Length: 232
Picture 1 (spheres, rainbow, N blue to C red):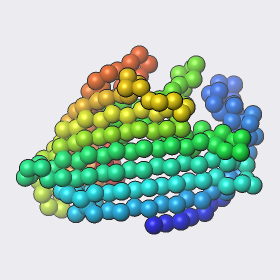
Picture 2: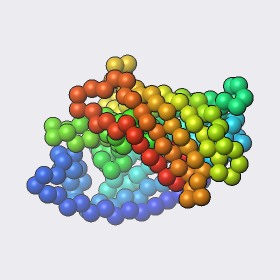
Picture 3: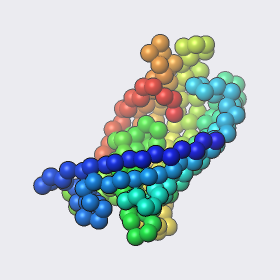
Picture 4: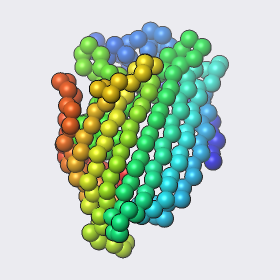
């Protein structure tokens, strides 16, 4: 468990072509804001390995609250559950779910730089990073108050040891929502593909090639994606 407090001072400079969400935030809260917020985190990890688990679970709960009398009053709650299960040696199944919810209070909005985003490695592969969810009239991604992501991935070890290599097949789904309406099945984005994870001498590397299964007009597609420094 962890508990923290932090003070942030944020200054924003607007331009003629700044997104409307930025302009609305400045109109409401001003160009410079002071934020005092607290964070509370809890995690329980029973995985047998941090980088390449074969079994075990990870539960993680994170809460962030902007406190008065500072300029920003908001809250965010995020929960992640990840489960590794050796279904048939040497295959390992990973199931992962992530839920997030946030909003402002005391008449203040959720700051756009505190909104939830999804898309890319770590959420819904095959779509550009942080590209899912509502957009403004100019096509700028707004982020949202709610986040729903689910992943299923089947791993097969190609090489064990300190420089382990694992091949995988996966399916992802998720979406970002701006309001509190009930999510509709058709609104989710889905993808499937193959991945390769390597614990290289430079650190963990992850490669994926994903095919979006229900691409809609305006979606930003990125089939090949790469991540260095952490394993999803």
